[in-house]
Length: 429
Image 1 (cartoon, rainbow, N blue to C red):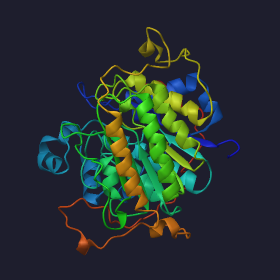
Image 2 (image 1 turned 60 degrees about the vertical axis):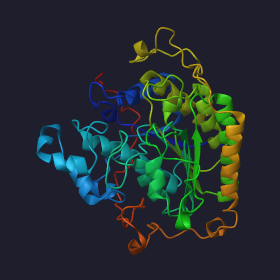
Image 3 (image 1 turned 180 degrees about the vertical axis):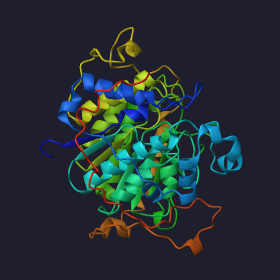
Image 4 (image 1 turned 90 degrees about the horizontal axis):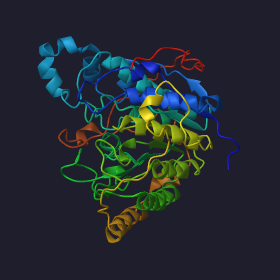
């Protein structure tokens, strides 16, 4: 066991002030609410708090195409009529609207995940938290599912400079398709996603049969679930699979996406998880004692998102939080009982024991195929700035392909600074 974990926490209040629109389920304001719960429980006193740097266009283009990044930089709500063709090309519109300060929003949440990865790489912390990150649907050249820049892919690319193998775990109710797609052809990253699966449920991918390809065959693991899964079923399956994954794959670092739309009562979700059930997965991953990067993700009942990520911040700090929420700037959102925990839900659990057993069996069979894979035996960490490369001639552009850009690393002297007093400001509601 490590003695006491050193934790870096990234937050910029500006990320919570953007507005997707009146009827849009994504409310970045949930990040301000989360942060104020963290403050009200005095958790910030147990961590190093940083304001992230704003990721530069060059950094964003380590994964995303330069023309897509440039368009995000240029587009504003006033210019939408002028650039309808480009908006259609890059899949911007109803789900991924154009709003004021869109590009800065992307720069902040991506910068937080990149900074978190760099601190882990340089052993400046054991665990790094960026609740603003976790936007796992964005693709190389397009926005998707409320996500514009895929901060997780950028963070993983950063981690690959220092770690031979990165394990990505996703407990959002939606399949982590953007991250899986980016690393579908490499054994340097194993992606494991637990999600609701169905043709009518976004994004419609994540079947247990999607296992990766070429060098990445068997390195994508999907755990497709049905409506109503509860704490007991979910956590048992999670612990069994993740234990075997870590045993077989031997990652050097873990990235954990904690989408809170898998909680009971989520506006877009359909699971029965309580906050304690969701947090049990975080607790289990923490106990593996590997360097850990933790992000947010989905979550559309914002007061429950804030509750969940505050509890999970406490879990990462080995601090149990009292159920009564202390007074804070957003206390009225947590009425009438002002309690931290929420119960599981009452949606019928359509995940039979036989269904879950069959999924577990298929995942275990796939895992056994990697037992003797070269990457598991690999002792030498690749050189700094290494990014897995693929022969473009072999890639059919109509197929799902991973990113293929060279890393142009920018070293910033002012990348980190103490931000313990970043909160002395007025936040717009």
